[in-house]
Length: 188
Image (cartoon, rainbow, N blue to C red):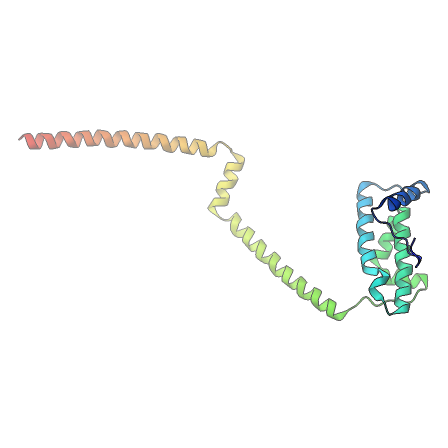
């Protein structure tokens, strides 16, 4: 535990030991998906509400410290429901605890995120159009045929080879006939 009352676990041996102690002290058992969700939400929430992000605003920093402590306790207890509650409605959670409210809306950040969203939407649309164009191409059709019939190209090559050999034999016969006609004309 840090001096400011916030539990911090790292991947160090001490953190691993504390985790093991928390597990043996009645930590709720989670399935693999819940454990992954808990870890992911914990990382996002701790990053979002870390007290060091609001240095200089004592009320906000105190609320962030309390909220981060709650987030850590939820993680330590394996309390996925409390973690979800905090993640889904941090303002409501803070209000229910009676702590000073915090303002998460930063208009400049919102504008940047909105621009990023618009850019990403444009890229998604462009990728969808490219995929549609690819799916309509003869190359993709060939790929699909070969994927469903792996020996298709060998069959086509064999048939083409047979057709070329037959055409070559016909041309050889025709050449021999023409040479014979030329020889007869020259003989007369």
